[in-house]
Image (tube, rainbow, N blue to C red; front, side, top):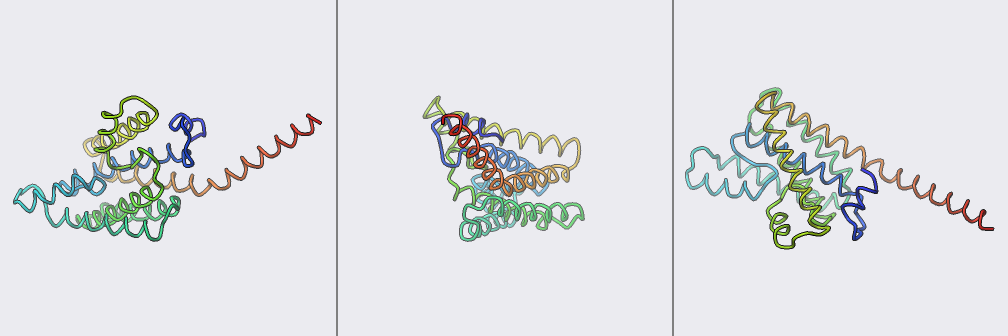
Length: 234
Protein backbone atom coordinates (compact mmCIF):
# COMPACT_ATOMS: atom_id res chain seq x y z
CA UNK A 1 0.00 0.00 0.00
CA UNK A 2 2.56 2.50 -1.16
CA UNK A 3 2.36 6.29 -1.21
CA UNK A 4 2.51 6.08 -5.01
CA UNK A 5 -0.77 4.17 -5.10
CA UNK A 6 -2.34 6.68 -2.73
CA UNK A 7 -1.18 9.52 -4.98
CA UNK A 8 -2.69 7.79 -7.98
CA UNK A 9 -6.03 7.55 -6.17
CA UNK A 10 -5.84 11.12 -4.87
CA UNK A 11 -3.90 13.15 -7.46
CA UNK A 12 -5.62 16.27 -6.16
CA UNK A 13 -4.13 15.57 -2.74
CA UNK A 14 -5.83 14.59 0.52
CA UNK A 15 -4.64 14.48 4.12
CA UNK A 16 -5.71 10.82 4.42
CA UNK A 17 -4.80 9.70 0.92
CA UNK A 18 -2.65 6.85 2.24
CA UNK A 19 -5.81 5.17 3.58
CA UNK A 20 -7.25 4.67 0.08
CA UNK A 21 -5.82 1.16 -0.51
CA UNK A 22 -6.65 0.14 3.07
CA UNK A 23 -10.29 1.13 2.63
CA UNK A 24 -10.47 -0.84 -0.62
CA UNK A 25 -9.38 -3.94 1.29
CA UNK A 26 -12.15 -3.29 3.82
CA UNK A 27 -14.59 -2.86 0.93
CA UNK A 28 -13.61 -6.26 -0.45
CA UNK A 29 -14.08 -7.72 3.04
CA UNK A 30 -17.55 -6.13 3.20
CA UNK A 31 -18.53 -7.94 0.01
CA UNK A 32 -17.34 -11.23 1.49
CA UNK A 33 -19.28 -10.64 4.70
CA UNK A 34 -22.53 -9.85 2.90
CA UNK A 35 -22.13 -12.97 0.76
CA UNK A 36 -21.89 -15.06 3.92
CA UNK A 37 -24.83 -13.36 5.63
CA UNK A 38 -27.11 -13.51 2.58
CA UNK A 39 -26.31 -17.07 1.53
CA UNK A 40 -25.81 -18.73 4.91
CA UNK A 41 -27.89 -16.74 7.40
CA UNK A 42 -31.19 -16.67 5.55
CA UNK A 43 -31.21 -13.73 3.12
CA UNK A 44 -30.11 -10.97 5.45
CA UNK A 45 -27.38 -8.35 5.03
CA UNK A 46 -25.03 -7.24 7.79
CA UNK A 47 -22.99 -4.68 5.79
CA UNK A 48 -25.44 -3.27 3.23
CA UNK A 49 -28.08 -1.69 5.40
CA UNK A 50 -29.94 -0.20 2.42
CA UNK A 51 -30.78 -3.70 1.25
CA UNK A 52 -31.41 -4.85 4.80
CA UNK A 53 -33.96 -2.11 5.49
CA UNK A 54 -35.76 -3.12 2.29
CA UNK A 55 -35.64 -6.77 3.40
CA UNK A 56 -37.13 -5.80 6.75
CA UNK A 57 -40.03 -4.05 5.05
CA UNK A 58 -40.63 -7.02 2.74
CA UNK A 59 -40.48 -9.45 5.64
CA UNK A 60 -43.04 -7.43 7.62
CA UNK A 61 -45.23 -7.45 4.51
CA UNK A 62 -45.26 -11.23 4.70
CA UNK A 63 -42.62 -12.39 2.23
CA UNK A 64 -41.93 -15.86 3.59
CA UNK A 65 -38.33 -16.17 2.35
CA UNK A 66 -37.25 -13.25 4.52
CA UNK A 67 -37.04 -12.93 8.31
CA UNK A 68 -38.08 -9.74 10.07
CA UNK A 69 -36.32 -10.77 13.34
CA UNK A 70 -33.07 -11.50 11.47
CA UNK A 71 -33.16 -8.25 9.48
CA UNK A 72 -34.12 -6.27 12.57
CA UNK A 73 -31.35 -7.86 14.62
CA UNK A 74 -28.79 -7.12 11.90
CA UNK A 75 -29.96 -3.51 11.72
CA UNK A 76 -29.85 -3.10 15.49
CA UNK A 77 -26.40 -4.66 15.79
CA UNK A 78 -25.07 -2.49 13.00
CA UNK A 79 -26.39 0.68 14.65
CA UNK A 80 -24.90 -0.26 18.01
CA UNK A 81 -21.52 -0.92 16.40
CA UNK A 82 -21.60 2.36 14.47
CA UNK A 83 -22.57 4.28 17.59
CA UNK A 84 -19.72 2.74 19.59
CA UNK A 85 -17.22 3.53 16.83
CA UNK A 86 -18.48 7.10 16.53
CA UNK A 87 -18.32 7.86 20.24
CA UNK A 88 -15.35 5.76 21.31
CA UNK A 89 -13.36 4.79 18.24
CA UNK A 90 -13.13 8.19 16.59
CA UNK A 91 -10.58 7.95 13.78
CA UNK A 92 -8.57 5.14 15.40
CA UNK A 93 -8.87 2.75 12.49
CA UNK A 94 -6.37 0.18 13.76
CA UNK A 95 -8.07 -0.19 17.14
CA UNK A 96 -11.55 -0.48 15.64
CA UNK A 97 -10.46 -3.05 13.06
CA UNK A 98 -8.77 -5.14 15.76
CA UNK A 99 -12.08 -5.25 17.64
CA UNK A 100 -13.94 -6.02 14.40
CA UNK A 101 -11.53 -8.90 13.74
CA UNK A 102 -12.32 -10.27 17.19
CA UNK A 103 -16.04 -10.13 16.45
CA UNK A 104 -15.54 -11.94 13.12
CA UNK A 105 -13.57 -14.59 15.01
CA UNK A 106 -16.56 -15.02 17.34
CA UNK A 107 -18.86 -15.38 14.31
CA UNK A 108 -16.51 -17.91 12.76
CA UNK A 109 -16.59 -19.88 16.00
CA UNK A 110 -20.40 -19.76 16.01
CA UNK A 111 -20.46 -21.05 12.43
CA UNK A 112 -17.91 -23.75 13.18
CA UNK A 113 -19.81 -24.96 16.26
CA UNK A 114 -23.19 -24.65 14.53
CA UNK A 115 -24.37 -22.23 17.18
CA UNK A 116 -27.28 -21.02 15.08
CA UNK A 117 -28.07 -17.97 12.99
CA UNK A 118 -27.81 -15.32 15.68
CA UNK A 119 -24.48 -16.52 17.06
CA UNK A 120 -23.02 -15.63 13.67
CA UNK A 121 -25.28 -12.73 12.72
CA UNK A 122 -24.95 -10.52 15.80
CA UNK A 123 -21.13 -10.31 15.96
CA UNK A 124 -20.94 -9.74 12.19
CA UNK A 125 -23.47 -6.91 12.33
CA UNK A 126 -21.69 -5.29 15.29
CA UNK A 127 -18.37 -5.55 13.45
CA UNK A 128 -19.70 -4.03 10.25
CA UNK A 129 -21.26 -1.22 12.26
CA UNK A 130 -17.89 -0.54 13.86
CA UNK A 131 -16.23 -0.47 10.43
CA UNK A 132 -18.79 1.92 8.99
CA UNK A 133 -18.66 4.15 12.05
CA UNK A 134 -14.89 4.67 11.89
CA UNK A 135 -14.95 5.08 8.09
CA UNK A 136 -17.64 7.74 8.51
CA UNK A 137 -15.41 9.60 10.97
CA UNK A 138 -12.40 9.34 8.67
CA UNK A 139 -14.47 10.82 5.80
CA UNK A 140 -12.16 9.74 2.97
CA UNK A 141 -13.96 10.78 -0.25
CA UNK A 142 -15.72 8.11 -2.32
CA UNK A 143 -14.58 5.18 -0.15
CA UNK A 144 -17.46 4.25 2.14
CA UNK A 145 -16.47 0.49 2.14
CA UNK A 146 -20.03 -0.88 2.00
CA UNK A 147 -22.42 1.53 0.23
CA UNK A 148 -22.17 1.83 -3.56
CA UNK A 149 -25.55 3.35 -4.49
CA UNK A 150 -24.34 6.90 -3.97
CA UNK A 151 -20.95 5.96 -5.40
CA UNK A 152 -22.56 4.74 -8.63
CA UNK A 153 -24.77 7.83 -8.82
CA UNK A 154 -21.75 10.10 -8.44
CA UNK A 155 -19.83 8.10 -11.04
CA UNK A 156 -22.63 8.45 -13.57
CA UNK A 157 -23.48 12.07 -12.77
CA UNK A 158 -19.96 13.50 -12.52
CA UNK A 159 -18.20 11.52 -15.23
CA UNK A 160 -14.44 11.12 -15.54
CA UNK A 161 -11.93 12.52 -13.09
CA UNK A 162 -9.95 11.62 -10.00
CA UNK A 163 -13.11 10.82 -8.06
CA UNK A 164 -14.23 8.44 -10.81
CA UNK A 165 -11.12 6.32 -10.25
CA UNK A 166 -11.91 5.89 -6.58
CA UNK A 167 -15.55 5.20 -7.25
CA UNK A 168 -14.81 2.54 -9.86
CA UNK A 169 -12.29 0.89 -7.55
CA UNK A 170 -14.78 0.93 -4.68
CA UNK A 171 -17.55 -0.68 -6.74
CA UNK A 172 -15.17 -3.27 -8.20
CA UNK A 173 -13.78 -4.15 -4.75
CA UNK A 174 -17.26 -4.76 -3.35
CA UNK A 175 -18.26 -6.76 -6.44
CA UNK A 176 -15.13 -8.92 -6.23
CA UNK A 177 -15.69 -9.52 -2.51
CA UNK A 178 -19.24 -10.70 -3.12
CA UNK A 179 -18.08 -12.82 -6.07
CA UNK A 180 -15.36 -14.44 -3.99
CA UNK A 181 -17.82 -15.07 -1.16
CA UNK A 182 -20.31 -16.69 -3.54
CA UNK A 183 -17.65 -18.92 -5.09
CA UNK A 184 -16.37 -19.99 -1.68
CA UNK A 185 -19.95 -20.75 -0.60
CA UNK A 186 -20.58 -22.90 -3.68
CA UNK A 187 -17.25 -24.66 -4.01
CA UNK A 188 -15.59 -24.69 -0.60
CA UNK A 189 -17.31 -23.80 2.68
CA UNK A 190 -18.89 -20.71 4.28
CA UNK A 191 -16.27 -20.89 7.01
CA UNK A 192 -13.55 -20.28 4.44
CA UNK A 193 -15.17 -16.97 3.46
CA UNK A 194 -15.28 -15.78 7.07
CA UNK A 195 -11.73 -17.03 7.54
CA UNK A 196 -10.72 -14.84 4.61
CA UNK A 197 -12.48 -11.84 6.17
CA UNK A 198 -10.66 -12.47 9.44
CA UNK A 199 -7.29 -12.67 7.68
CA UNK A 200 -7.94 -9.42 5.79
CA UNK A 201 -8.99 -7.59 8.94
CA UNK A 202 -5.97 -8.77 10.92
CA UNK A 203 -3.75 -7.67 8.04
CA UNK A 204 -5.35 -4.21 7.91
CA UNK A 205 -5.21 -3.80 11.69
CA UNK A 206 -1.55 -4.84 11.83
CA UNK A 207 -0.67 -2.53 8.92
CA UNK A 208 -2.40 0.43 10.55
CA UNK A 209 -0.87 -0.34 13.96
CA UNK A 210 2.57 -0.08 12.36
CA UNK A 211 1.69 3.11 10.42
CA UNK A 212 3.07 5.60 12.99
CA UNK A 213 6.38 3.73 13.07
CA UNK A 214 6.61 3.82 9.27
CA UNK A 215 5.82 7.54 9.31
CA UNK A 216 8.57 8.24 11.85
CA UNK A 217 11.03 6.16 9.84
CA UNK A 218 10.12 8.01 6.63
CA UNK A 219 10.43 11.37 8.39
CA UNK A 220 13.81 10.36 9.77
CA UNK A 221 15.02 9.27 6.36
CA UNK A 222 13.81 12.52 4.80
CA UNK A 223 15.54 14.52 7.51
CA UNK A 224 18.79 12.63 6.92
CA UNK A 225 18.62 13.29 3.20
CA UNK A 226 18.02 16.99 3.86
CA UNK A 227 20.98 17.15 6.21
CA UNK A 228 23.26 15.43 3.70
CA UNK A 229 22.08 17.74 0.94
CA UNK A 230 22.82 20.75 3.14
CA UNK A 231 26.37 19.53 3.73
CA UNK A 232 26.83 19.02 0.00
CA UNK A 233 25.52 22.52 -0.75
CA UNK A 234 27.95 24.00 1.73
